[in-house]
Image (tube, rainbow, N blue to C red; front, side, top):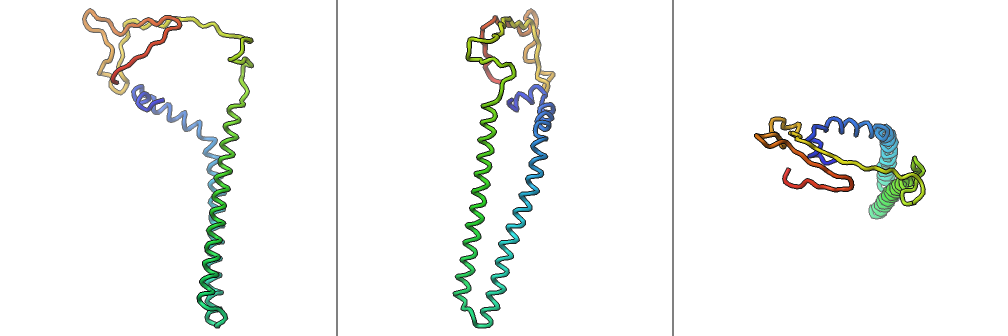
Length: 178
């Protein structure tokens, strides 16, 4: 529903409550998932920075003892840095692929869902409801809940409120400025 309509009819609170209730199961799952993701991120960051600190410690010891030149140390440092960046990027690709597979599974679940009544809407077999009706509005008065003193449709003098008859199988549309 459009936010303007929700506000016009004063339904923001009801829709917000319904939306929060609908999201609650997913929120609990996301909280658990966030904890595991945070733990995995922390471990990966510890591994990266722990490796760097180990390289600097051993590299400095070897350079001080004269067993390693600075250029060799720098080449080893850059090799480890670029390989760790590549490993980090591959992890991000696996995560994106997993999310794509989960989304595809949800789409197939929705499209392959079982209908409650067993009727095929495209088939001539099965029960088809025969609905016929007429909608009538007679001398209706209307004001938006957010502006109750400003009447949109109202009775004035010999003029009644809003009246409209809609016959069965007839479509109508209200247009104009809101």
